[in-house]
Length: 260
Image (spheres, rainbow, N blue to C red):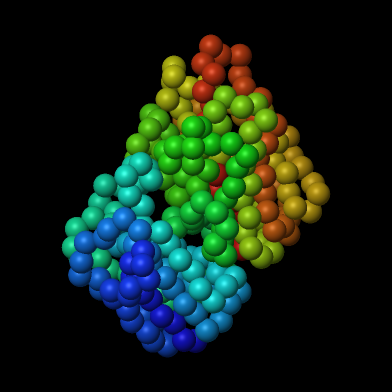
């Protein structure tokens, strides 16, 4: 499997690159500027890869449907939902590699993706929502699948979340880019009380046409729901019913979906 990894300027100039078979490591010695991209090219699409776009962000096991994937380096307001250590400084370790069958077949959180971005890029799992509070990065849907369970405040990292802008019709969908077999969902609702409200009931909808209505409680702990195995391509959380609480601000810190 041929792989290439590049750091590319906004004008298309390549400032660092490396190619290889099955695994590529790239040390970029330089400071990122607005408009910079990390570009991964592969000889095979519709495959799993382990990618790391920043050593502070850590690796991600992702399913790439295309032969080329681009990651936009965040700046300004778009960066405050990340740790200040990410993409910082003048030395960065990036990599992409093929993955083993054991990694693919392992029971895990198949919704986890620390490199998810706004917009369709061919990188899965990928999350979308019909509303995000004021379009701010700290309330973006992608925050709900980045693996960060911290839920006791709201705002800049590590308190980023999915904010619904007080919209009772809000819905969030996680697409897997393939068929997965799952049997458990864990929700971490944001618990910045008394600023926050909480959902007393939500509905999980699945691509196979089934749905589950789920009663929740006021808690900062993970809400866990197990069910018979389902083969699905996506899962959606919707029909979010607020508790009888003065606050108008329920939000979701993390959704985890377990299976293979």
